[in-house]
Image 1 (cartoon, rainbow, N blue to C red):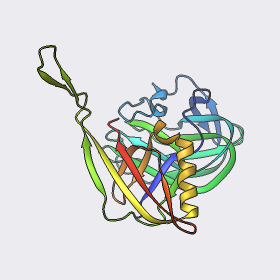
Image 2 (cartoon, rainbow, N blue to C red):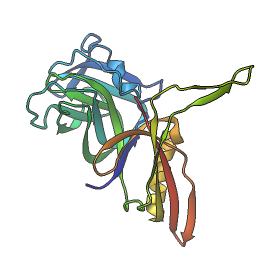
Image 3 (cartoon, helix red, strand yellow):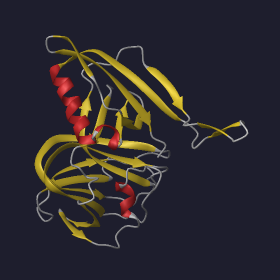
Length: 257
């Protein structure tokens, strides 16, 4: 499977958007403030915190201020999802412009017995303001729901992929001249990939993604062909190497939560 990014294209993390918990009856979402416990945990860009109390037909709905487009949804499970055998229909995403007129149901499954992302794609929808995810079965350990766009790599990056660990150490010196170190975390992996020859279209798509994320202001998903990573992407610089062809380097920092 090829590499790709998934990023927030509906501006779901804006503070002036409405994130509601509730239940579905048929295709109609009804707000219910007691349906879920800590529903805000799945919209805080922190995959280390989870909501609870997820029963069949409970749901979470993102109501954004302006018409937007999306073609992907990803759910992060921080641990065992609690579903014995997945039939790939444990969750459903619907979208529309009114909570009583949602359409375009797309079913997808749960995680596994370990921390993992579950990703589903659908035909791009445009000019929508309501995005609702229904949990068709009781589930555990849901820590993030990301609705947005999937950007597949035009080509795989060059083979000289670089990887390092940033420990964020701060070296200080006492008044007596003795040095000591402050360490704030166990280390974050930093991956640098390079594209030497990409098209104008892929460049434009990368810039669109960067604009939605405001560079590294928001976290996003990078799938390297094997594993999903929760990352921040530094601002990119493009060099034109030929007419309509570009090179660029992407620096991605793995997020601890």
